[in-house]
Image (tube, rainbow, N blue to C red; front, side, top):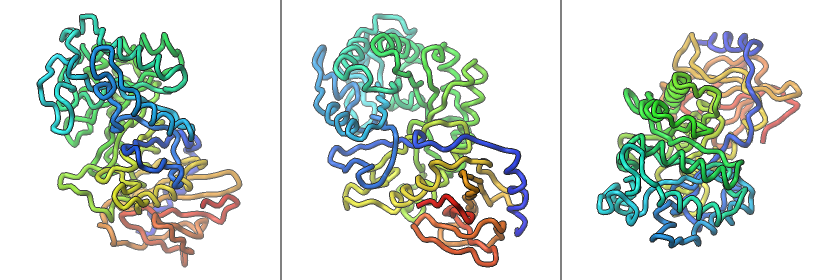
Length: 416
């Protein structure tokens, strides 16, 4: 076990990555009364609208009738701190739905998961209801307000979308034409599926969407990242990249536009949330993904950086503040992966100018609260944990467990 780090250190001279940017970090915010995240030290660069009560059906309440108040309040709050907006267009108003009395999900309005009634299953039809909404939306907010528009939410989940792939491709085409005609800088994000097949690691719905021609209308390929084990997201992202390659979409940015832990027996244990979240971010940073939108800052089931009931930052929120500060500005010189000599020990390496070196290390086999000691290379002199504690490394021995620890060299660049 004591040799687990040696091979990793040798690889640092042969691998290089891009500097980790604040642009990677996105959030969902659900409660209008919640304090804006960066007022509490939760830094992020981009906000996604899903879950904020401003779906198509929330705004377009009757033909030609629009309720803009909630949208305007969200945009005003976002504008004050300058984050990019990813607006998610989905959920058909009942008056426009092809099945206006159908139940989609118990907590949503009737008919919203069905395509509009002026769009045939083969994708033909006027699609005028959607076109009118997108036109009114962009005229209302003005150019430059939306950086990204995402087309629909989780189309492989029938409570979210009950239409055909052809209808979804047609809606994407119409949204793109209107958006780019009004603001050519808006980028279109593909419908984000949750994964399917064994362990939800395959992306068969994405394949069907690209096979039907959807790729020509999107600038960015999206997926969702709810997983039982943080590292499982890597397989889903790799599957996404393979599907993109198969359908000539390689080279486009990849966003994980929603994600957190998934537990077959909710609620997810609070003690595991800080470590899961850090491992989840580390796993995605080890792939070509360019943005991740954590779901959600103020949700009491997923993400949970701020508790809307106690109105306080959670331990996960505190951990997020810490690892955001550790990661941003570093360069990942070796992606996170299991060590050959101990495949349940994961690690990744980072550098900063001035000779600073860091590593994140954890175990995928140990339950929360249990650790084992391993030997760290001599350049690392201290480590920090997700609770804000800092320790001096003695005799090169470090304890690793479920929660990653952050090792640092004697640095000219110190993280906070």
